[in-house]
Length: 250
Ligand code: MF3
Ligand code: CO
Image: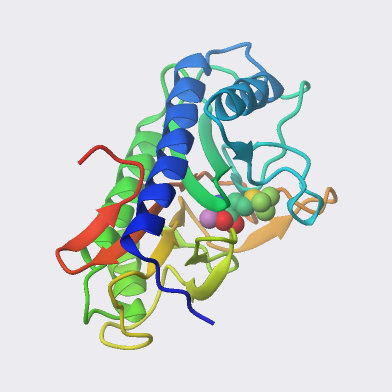
């Protein structure tokens, strides 16, 4: 079932996502060599609570933390830990969610710790471009397949892989609502986008194979070939005027 959102609901979703973006920026600034991913998780949780929200992922299907912190070959759902200390050269993907007044914000960024390799930089740049291209498709009359195709074309055109095992999603009063939003597809196919639809678009792009292996912790998803992966996510509303990236200053 798809829930279209009113203007006042979009405003609350904007607040929830603004809080998430603030937490992600703080995490990015704090992410220096020697800092643990558990330290980053505490920073994000404190900021979200101070901002009047609650962490969205903590307790979701038993997930234990505020952030997902996925390092290098980890794609998504890396669990923050005091044992994981960042090193210069790491590619870190951080996913964060917050609930404000019953509405869910959900966003993710990837960045380098200290100096990173040229391929890591290119992978992050292309993944950001995948998300930007996808956002451009978020307009009335466009279709879900246009979003997936935009991501796939940009990623594969750069020689990178598109993860299939995880997809984006509708978002609102639940973290995951219909529809699913794959990062692959055919233009002009699938659900027609209408004003009030809000989707979390989250390309997960790999340096090599897109095949995934999940660790014995039941969460951490990493590339099968051990090569790098990057992840960016925005929650985006369809409006008459085009895409509205929630939480971003207009
Ligand atoms: N952005 C991811 C998602 O929407 C994060 C979920 S982590 C979980 O699926 F722990 F909440 F599952
Ligand atoms: Co998401």
